[in-house]
Length: 523
Ligand code: GDP
Image (cartoon, rainbow, N blue to C red):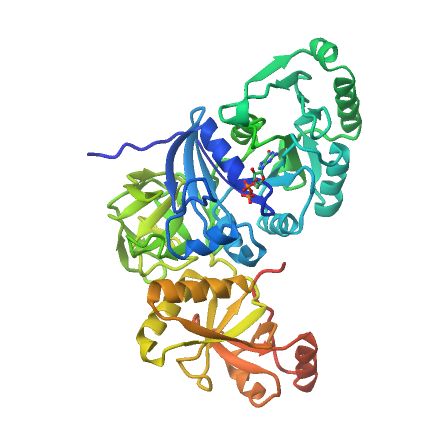
C-alpha cells in the first residue's frame, strides 16, 4: 500500500515543569481534547494510570518521576500536534536539553500555589538558550494559590520574560469561577463536572451577564485586566517569537479547564516547524529533501522487545517507511523498514512522517544522539551539546567473570547518553569512570546493568566535581599533578578531572600555558 502523506500543519512542543506541577495530568487532558494518533515510546504512567513498559522503569514508577522521554501525536482542528515529553527531575536535565532540540516551542507549567520552582527555572533557561518561545500555563487554579498579579511579577522578575496573559482568572485560586478572555472581554464560565472526567463544559457570557452573575469576583478580574493593559501586558507575536514575552493561560488540568484553550493557543501562536540550521549554519527548509536528527537513543524499552530505539525529529522532507537514507556520520546507507511508533506495549508502524514529527527507528545500532540521517542532498546538523558533568564514579562488574556483559552494557549506556564514559590506561578497561550531571543517572546505570545485562555493578564515588577539556599535546603536563586525573572520553576528548575550582586555578597558575576548556553548554 502506498503511504499517503499527511500534510496537515504541525505544532511540535514540549511541556516543561517542576515535578508535580501536573505535566502528566495535562498530557492526558490534552489527549482527551484531541484525537490521539500515535504514541512513541513509553507513557509515563503513574500508579493507576497507563503503565510504563520496561523493567528498569520500575525505578521511575517507584519514585513517581519520569526518566525517559516519549512523544505523543494527536490531531486537533486540522493540525497535527506532536507533544515531546521531558523528564521532570533535575538530574535528567541533560536529557531534557536534548529533547528540547526537537521542539519548536515549550509550555511552561507552573503550580498556582508554588509559583516558579527550581526545575522550572532551570528548564526555562535551557529554552532561552535554545531560543524556544515559551507559553505559560498556571495550573491547579481550582486550589488555593498565589495572587495572580504576584505570579506575573514572579515570572517577570525571576525569568525576565514579560507575561502577556491571554486569560485572567475570575475568582481567587481555590474559588475558580472561570476566566476573563482578555481579547474579547467575555467571561468563560467554568462548570464543574464530576471529577473532570469529560471535557469541562465552558459557557461564554458577555461582560454585563458576567457582572450580574459573579459580582465582585468579576469586578476584580476586570480591574486587574485593566491594570495589565495599562502596563502594556498585551500579546505581541514578534516579541513572543523573539523570546521576550510569554502568553499566559490559567487552567486546571485536573478539571480539564483551559486545556482546549491551550490547544487553540498552540495552533494560533506557536511556531510551525521552520528551517533547521546545519553544522555550517545554512538553513535546510522543511520542503527540502528528507533529513532528520537523532535526539534520543534508548534501549530496553520493553522486556519483550530487547532492542534499541533511536528517536529522530524530521527536519525536512517526507519520511516514508522503507526508505533507505544516509547516515551522515559514516556516509553509510541506513534502511528504515523498521521505523515504528511504539504504542504502549504494542507497536505500530510509522508509514509517513513530515517535518516536526518524531520517528522511532528500531535496531538502529549505528545511530547516536546528535546524528543526522538524510536522503538526496547531503546535510549534517550540529552535534547536540552535552552538559558539564559534576559527578564521577568508577564502575566495575561485581562478578569479574562477566566482563563481556559489562563491556557491552556500558558501551550501550554510553551510546544512549545515559552517562559519559571515561577511560585511562591507569584504571584499565574493566574499571572505567562514569561522569554524570546528576547522581540519579548512576542509579539508572546500576539498575539497567543488573536488569538488562545481568551484570550487577559496583560503584565507587570519586571526589572530582568538575572536568575540563585538555588539548592532546598538553595532557602530558598534567601527569603526576596531585588530585588531577586525565581520562579519555569515548568520543576521543581528553578530560582533566578536578576536585574543585581552586585546584583548577592552582594548576593554571603553575602551568600558565595550559589551555583548559570548559565543557558543554552554559547553565
Ligand atoms: P507531574 O509530576 O508534573 O507529571 O504531575 P502530575 O500530573 O502527576 O500531578 C501531580 C499531582 O497534582 C497529582 O496528584 C494530580 O492529580 C494533581 N494535579 C494536577 N493538575 C491538577 C489541577 O489542575 N488541580 C488539582 N487540584 N490537582 C492537580
